[in-house]
Length: 466
Image 1 (spheres, rainbow, N blue to C red):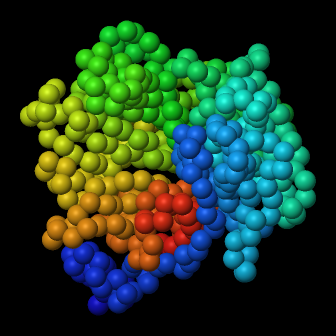
Image 2 (image 1 turned 60 degrees about the vertical axis):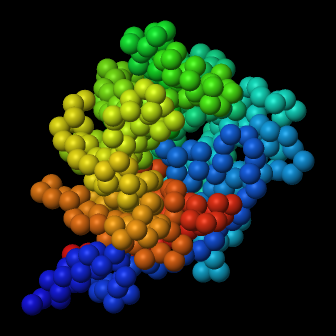
């Protein structure tokens, strides 16, 4: 029997036993944790955002000259909403060190990172123009550092927009890069009607810009645009793929009135419909018609996009989570509906869904293991892995909190393997190719640890090779 065969038998035995024997497994068959570290701690800003708010982008990038993370600091004695500033960290042999911080601007949201293969490190910032006000105008900028000398003052890049958009501290921005081609795109929302976008080409010119208008909700009690937020965006060879979730005030009057009785608020946002669009060549400014990938609109459920990967053949691979029902409304509006929680995967080619699969799901009635935050990890050989968090309860009734990985192949999906982190991550970024980091067998994570909500931590995991 080969070492590889033995390793696989060990993996399956460990999975069947709930992961109790991970330490005895062979490194060739199971993920190996190489580092777990604290990066920084923070205080709640009470402004509606937080360090993971830019979940569709990332605050972690890997480059030849090192590993970088952006952070968010809450400023004492400064009132919300713009009561934060960005921080920049680098990992060295001595651990994580803060190498830069905003000394003048104020902001509300975290500032995502991107990287180019030529050593440029890019930080998306959105400083307010009225720091004394509760809310107001803001100015999107990109700070360009050199990874080889990141403590030097950055160059300020000002995106060129179509017209003069009225940006605010609520940016809901998406910031991604095609690292090898040294190009990037920035999306930033304007109210409830559309997103402005600006494209920076390899010559350093803002050569294309425009508006991405939201899909139309004709079926609502009051027809309206469906604002799309928290998108996973991919840029590859000037093709752009955009997949996000509906984010509007509850559009059905009967549900909105009932929710107001429960919460006392006039508003409650939906997060129930997953939409996708793409541009074959962003320099044309043209996007395809919106495609609805998934919906939980009939039972007032919940959807959240997790990640997107553009494969070498140009297909977009999508990852998202779903909850079937808002339990608060179940008894009155849909008492016979079954609750479920699931992690879902689909492939979209030329604007059409060509495959879909439920990767993980809770038991009947929503009981048991509940999948949560998830990301793709792509290796240099274009092997596609999924890392995700699992909470809830195990089949034997014990409380569950762990990260798992599985590989998606054309012919099958591998059984999930537990990542033996001492401190599982409940919500996290990765050093993703969507932000210019290179493909790697090393899964690098930045995010919240279970049980320590005010700490941002880092983990590095070596994925199986066989």
